[in-house]
Structure formats: structure tokens, C-alpha cells
Amino acid sequence: MLYPSIDKLLNIVDSKYMLVHVASKRSKQMLETSHYQLRISEYQSKKDIGRALEELEQGLIKVVKKDK
Image (cartoon, rainbow, N blue to C red; front, side, top):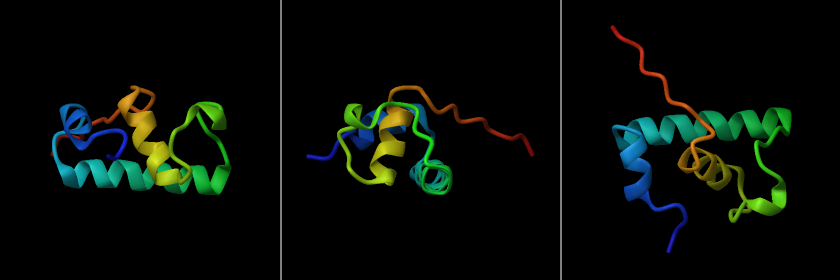
């Protein structure tokens, strides 16, 4: 089973597309800056994309919607 579950994440983000976009963007930030919001030992995932999803699930990433 994957952690965090997609059902929990979709309660935070409106769509799967937005979820992928946010996680991808945060993962790239982690790769470029090596800045993590938690200690490495606190993450369950070993990869940055999983760590980005964990941060989103814990409320460390805020998704801001732009109005058209």
C-alpha cells in the first residue's frame, strides 16, 4: 500500500491533475535546493516525489488556486 493514500490527498487537492502538478513542482524544488521541511528520518518515502506527497498530506504545502 502506498503512503500517503490518494484518497486523503484528493481531499486536500481538487483533482488528480493538480495533485501531480503540485507534487512534481515540490519534488523539483527538493532536488534543486536540497531543502526539506522535515528531517530526512521523518519521511517514510525514500524518493523526493513521495516526500513531496507526504508534505502535502501533513499540510506543509499550501495549494493556492488562481482565479481566471
